[in-house]
Length: 134
Image (tube, rainbow, N blue to C red; front, side, top):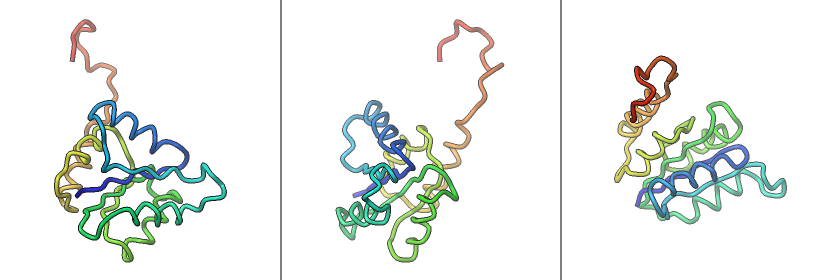
C-alpha cells in the first residue's frame, strides 16, 4: 500500500489533509504529523509512532512544509534509517497527484513535483474575459 505522510510546523498538515479529503473523499492512507502543537510530544516520537503503523511492504512518501525547516531536517536525518521518499514543500495540486500514485518511485514523485511547481501561477493578466469560467 502507498502511504502518504504530511508533516508540518503547526496544523498545516491537518488542513491539507482536510482539503484533500474534501476533493478526493476518505483517505485512510494519508497520515499527518503536526509538529510543535503539543510541547510534551517530540517530533521524533510522532515520526516513530506514524512509521510503526506501516508494514514493511508499504511505499511511503513524506511531504514536509518547507525545505530546511526543522520538520524537514528531522526527516532528512532519517533517510538512511527508514525507507521513504522525502518531498519538501507542499501544495494541493502536488498532493492530489501524489495521493493518486499507486507505486511511487523517486523518478515518478519528481515528475509529480515538477507538475505541481508549474501549477503555481500569478493569475493577473491571465484571464482575457472576466466572465470566462475555468
